[in-house]
Image 1 (tube, rainbow, N blue to C red):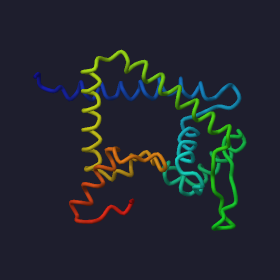
Image 2 (image 1 turned 120 degrees about the vertical axis):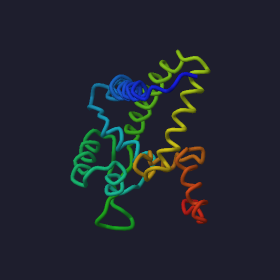
Image 3 (image 1 turned 90 degrees about the vertical axis):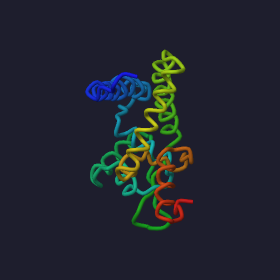
Length: 187
């Protein structure tokens, strides 16, 4: 096996990132916009979080997305104006609100997710089974190492209701807990 060229690997990872962010994602966002309201990466991230965490407070969403409370408020207001999100008075705190997607918001999010999946699959379908296996092993290994090296919450998808035990970060978290002789508090 030839020696690994780290500069080439770094370059190829940058190209992959650009492919995902600048080719595949814009296609999916355009599919979700439907000509009525603009769908941005920030709006999509907020809608994904609310979908995975129905009833979440705006502060929880801001923290998960890594944005300031005022930015989150502006984002929420734009999503409400678009008819994709609804704010409700919190049952626990009369001063607080909870967030949930509207039926239209769920439809738009589903449309964007399906468009993204189709665009990504169009690329993956052109790869051989061996290439796909290598890609899967490489990405999984990279995430496993990253999960041990940094706080996995820095790049956790905040899956909420859609969390699976097969997530590499869940596996890393479990190994960390076992190494420290602690129980997993998320169960």
